Amino acid sequence: MPQDYIPILIQSIVVLGFVITTMVATHFLGPKRSSKAKLENFECGIEGMGNARSPFSVKYFLIAILFVLFDVEVIFMYPWAVNFKDLGKDGFLEMFLFMILVLAGFIYILLKGALKWDKN
Image 1 (cartoon, rainbow, N blue to C red):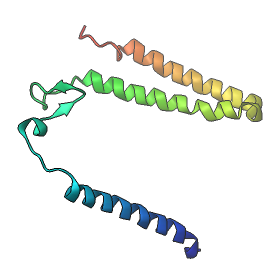
Image 2 (image 1 turned 180 degrees about the vertical axis):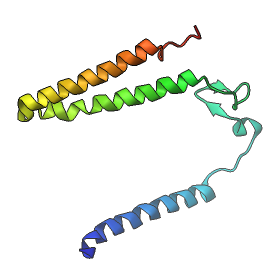
Image 3 (image 1 turned 90 degrees about the vertical axis):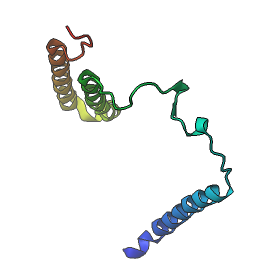
């Protein structure tokens, strides 16, 4: 029913009002001191050096993607562990097959040398 969504609409309006009010208030009330040091890039306490457009190694992105892939696969194990007793033998066999496939994929990327960082 449409009236069931009224609390969500009210909460959304309150949140948007708070965000907009905060942004406008900090813009007008905050200090406006600009200096060369303040306008420089700053990250993790390390001063910037070189060109920010320098290319990264493809290996970096490959390892990042593989990490996300295997991390998400491990997330699938949590619901299985929570419902381990309810799933019984069939659930165990299905998770065993899943783990064999994950392990096969991991062994494949190891054999292909995807995780070797050096250029040899």
